[in-house]
Amino acid sequence: MDPPAVSRLARRLEPLHSMIYFAPEVGSELGELGIGHPRAQYFAQRSAAMGAVGPGVVAATYYNFNPALIARFVPMVWTAAAPADVLNARLRAADGALRRLLGSEVSSRGCERASVLARRATEACRPEDRALYAAHADLPWPDEPHLALWHAATLLREYRGDGHLHALLGAGVTGLEALVLHTATGKGFVVEVAQKTRGWSPEQWGEASARLRERGLLTADGGLTDAGAAFRDGTEAETNRLSTAPYASLGDDDAAELAELAGGLTRTILAAGAFPDGVFASGSDRATARG
Image (cartoon, rainbow, N blue to C red; front, side, top):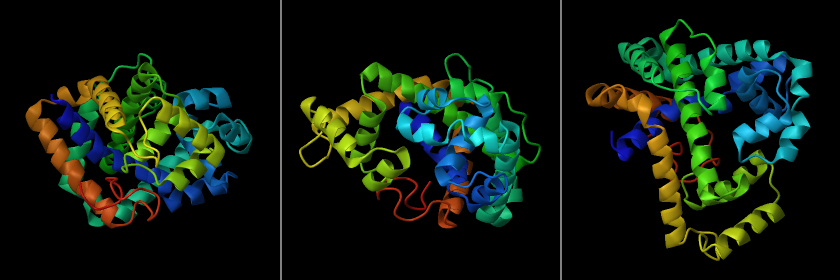
């Protein structure tokens, strides 16, 4: 399976998972458990599959968050709610969010078929050195098709994410430097949002940018140089290589069908406002309703 096809499939499936981080249903469900701060909610819901882990584990598996930010909320969140309770609340939130965003499509044949194909793809994933993927793979599969699709999208996203960390480590960039480079593409977070949500100060951001300029990867105004663009292309190519197995296992026809179905569902949730304005740059797939 060629890298562009792998990347296209990942982009079309990923929003079906990541909408959970912006869903008001999560705030309501976790708020009832006593986890009220948005950052605490993020760390709790994404880490809960690993158990009541400490801040070091979260920092290692998330890569581009400031460890000092993580330590403000982890392990404190586990005194408010046990990981199992967080996971149950997250699943209820995913159910409510998908029903709201997909409307009648939540019970469509297309959604059901996409869930079958995506689940088949996960069967080719391997757990070796893929901590976030492996933790979520131990969770039980939901029965309802739209939730099974969300769970499959979660597994495939974390599987790809774990591989992406290998690519970044191999390329010799820190978590913060990787975040700076990603925002420089114009396809990720707006800079101010990246700094706030990941816990980096403007001074720390500036220091990382200076290091990247010294390596010839960033221009003086924060854009990618030709070398920087090639660097990003290289890490994405390696990420695609490490993420190929689940999609290739479907075969070309079923992979193309999954891409079409997931693209349609993603367009629906984007049009329904799954992601707030002003968070992602204009070049991001999540900034406009396209699949």
